Length: 527
Ligand code: G4P
Image 1 (tube, rainbow, N blue to C red):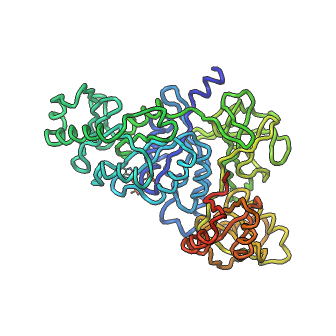
Image 2: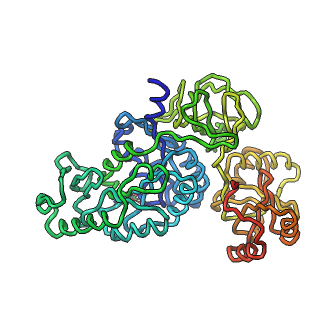
Image 3: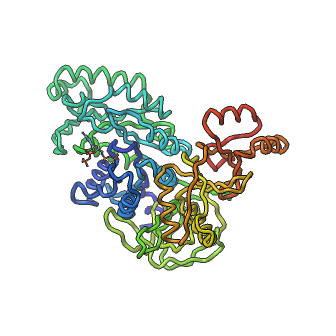
């Protein structure tokens, strides 16, 4: 097979949702369709259990298991599908944001009863910044939930999406009869517990067909006719280009646990989802079809087991063919590197691979050389864009608790920051270091790892900051004034960029109003 064919058949995507909406269940059903796993329950170990939230070692252990399921690849209808796992646990949101930089499209799972939830909003926001094409799957239709049109309003209102229903539910909960597949003009009848067969798929030329009344009852048939007519009046028809630009979002309804509506969505997904997309670097655009290999590191997973101190760096291939035991160029370190045992992930199995193509994810064993965002090429200097840091939500001063070990502490902090465990800010006024994280759990992780991996001890002190904004300016004079008035709130991040740390959203707004010439950015990457 030519490299062009290899690239054209790849579909690399992530499933995003608020915890408990059904991401794990849906992932599992997709893998079952692809024949990548044989039984339900195989992916469950990937999920961070609710009861374990207070014990970070337990979570890390579960995360350790999840390395194997970080990428789940399978074949379906001659396409190679790479699902990148995105932790739903809020404390690992940064991990998820970064993983989303390595996908070409996403599926958003929403619980029909809960509607659009907070974490869904955050993650969709990250995808929207990159115009990632997204499909929505409304899950748990076997339960009572919100009205379909109300959900579409929420999807459009809270997620700022342009909804395009491609299937529509017939009843819900106890009365759930199935869906009408608008995309293929097909009636798909529901049997609980995933026992759908071909006879449950009824092709109907028109919704006027009396077979509809026969199958779902005249009341639901009437409702369906009215609703589908309303959809055609209110919502735009499907448009492949608009979807690919991230401007139109197909919506499907189903029940993952009952394996209902999943195949419809998967069939549509393999048809419409984009093949590996070009990637932007500071230097130029990288086309996946280019001959020369290039890729970037989007995630680093450290092994918490003291007997196996290695880390796995996850590389997204962006162009060319990646080959085992070949000399490549690590751009940031300006060094040649060779990988003797690069790993590919096939559902539950890991295996050493000889080559990989754009869209694929390869695991590289790393002894501490890599940093999130690093580029690997055949020699060209490239700096990939679109891997920003976002504002943490929790901040604490970090102090050295063992003055004899300050060198170890600094090394440890730097390496953990390179891995993306948390963000480091150094205050301009005092030179004190502040660690910013998304969840409280990371503070324990950092303390534990500094001690066990670097032999250093740290302590924390509370600090009253709740948000970080990266700042830029055009007028040096105005920045000087801002800097001298607000020095106690100004820090530098790991790349030396200025960051404003705010006590609250309210105080941030006041400062913004007081300094209209300073631009405040939500992420570290701005023009
Ligand atoms: P997550 O990865 O998004 O966090 O969610 P997960 O798939 O683990 O699903 C969360 C809960 O919702 C699970 O129940 C799961 O069985 C259930 N679920 C998923 N899809 C459906 C569906 O279509 N209908 C209904 N009724 N339930 C669904 P749990 O009791 O929390 O876990 P478990 O004991 O089943 O593992």
